[in-house]
Length: 133
Image 1 (spheres, rainbow, N blue to C red):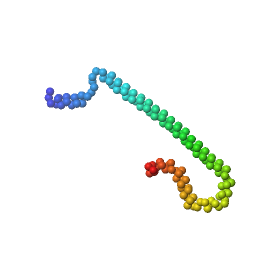
Image 2: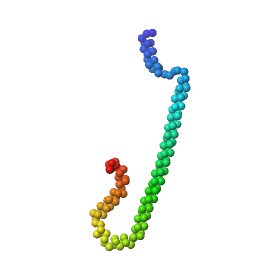
Image 3: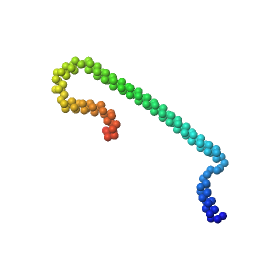
Image 4: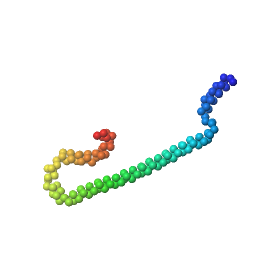
């Protein structure tokens, strides 16, 4: 053999030396394919489980939203009933002029700002700037 043949043999051994040509090659390939197929099935099962969990959480959140809206509606009806019950007293108090003496513009602004902040606080907490408060 000359030097070119030895160099060629070395290159071919380097390239083809890792090929699996032993007996039982097809069985080993079939086993690898089966492992990949099983992992694909497990991924599909995992995906289906996550989808079921997502649907369950969506339904739970919808139930909670309905419950909260009924609670808010109940408070609104209770406030309406109180106003209805004490409508005469409220109108008499408003017409007597005690309203302007009881609340000046600064107090009214402070009170309305405080109420607005209390109502909006849960949504304001979601802002990145206020998240750590």
